Each structure stands twice: as C-alpha cells, then as structure tokens.
Image 1 (cartoon, rainbow, N blue to C red):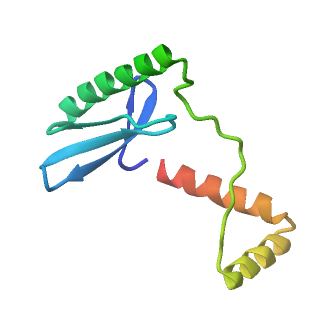
Image 2 (tube, rainbow, N blue to C red):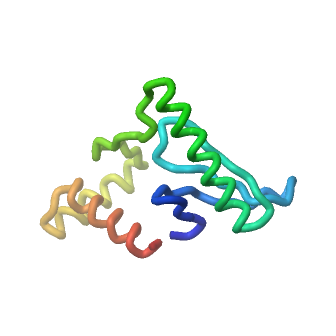
Image 3 (cartoon, one colour):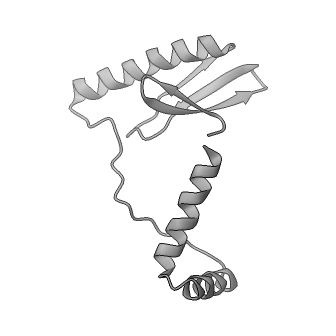
Length: 113
C-alpha cells in the first residue's frame, strides 16, 4: 500500500512534513499513539523501531494491551441517494448490501497493495 512501511511486522503510515523537512511515521492498530520522525528513510526505520519498543515497554509496564482489536463491524454513513444506489446494485448482484460492500472494500484494499 502506498505510504505504508513495515517495521518489525507492524505497519506505519508515512507522510512528509514540509514545515520541518522530515518524514513522519505513525503506527497503525495500536491502542495509543506512537509516532516518529527522521530526515531519511533509514533514519525513519530506526526511529520507528525505537518508538515502537518504547510504546510496547510502557504498555507492558502499565498492564495495557498495546494493540487494538477489530470486531469486524463499523458504521457507514452515506448520502441517501448513494445508499439507495448501493442497495440496488447489491440486489442486482443477488447479494446483501453487507456482502456487496465487503467485496468492494476487499477489492479496493487489494488494488492498493
């Protein structure tokens, strides 16, 4: 996926902050924030490892689960005409709206990879 890096098996989204001329990384799927900065990719990887380890150590010290758990459920709000169009498209495909949306999301995620 674009703008994602893997550091020791954990994904982080990367952006560039032009105000400070540095890359910024932020780990995803954590129960708290663990971000890091560097001016090179190699530096970003190293700072990411340090930031992640500090976060994990602090969670262990406080007895906190460091990773978010995903239930597989989320709420989606759409404009009514789009909701209607999606419902009709799902019905035409002989699928529930949930199945249809899940397939579209899965396809989009694979295309981004």
